[in-house]
Amino acid sequence: SAVISQKPSRDICQRGTSLTIQCQVDSQVTMMFWYRQQPGQSLTLIATANQGSEATYESGFVIDKFPISRPNLTFSTLTVSNMSPEDSSIYLCSVATGGSNQPQHFGDGTRLSIL
Amino acid sequence: GQQLNQSPQSMFIQEGEDVSMNCTSSSIFNTWLWYKQDPGEGPVLLIALYKAGELTSNGRLTAQFGITRKDSFLNISASIPSDVGIYFCAGDQTGANNLFFGTGTRLTVIP
Image (cartoon, rainbow over all chains, first blue to last red):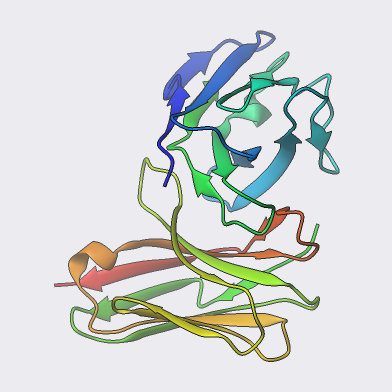
């Protein structure tokens, strides 16, 4: 399966600042997704990153707070804007190759702590 | 979003024992997936299921897509210490690959 690299792997940030997380895949993939995993919790889908168009956000997540870019088929970024302590989570990128019924594979995540 | 409930929430078993866990929902899903997450890592895909009643194995792991399409089961035979981790089920309802994740089962294997 594809090799997925996320940067940074972890960060500690001050409230009110923004952080951009990068997701790089070693091969072209059809679909890329961003998830949030709050401490000790399960994964929640934030959005589907669409190549060449605006991301599709899930209920409870908005573009102003989590702007996403996907300039090509191997790269995407997620920005966490105007951070507060409640944004402390693991942010995970996943990809699916082929059609929409192909299973998703995950990167190792970005562990974000906001002070 | 959809709620996928996993049971049990946690398990402590002796090495060599078999393990069973399940995932249930009040809604129908078209795809069921099982992932394992180790500390500090992302979830790793174990098994994918696409058809009601489907039974699929991956080594010592066996998973089934429930006939009602509202549940799935994962069994691990002859557990070993490296089976320790959190097991998540995930389901897709629409075929658009929008996954809902279960609440997780934390497995501890005692050597």
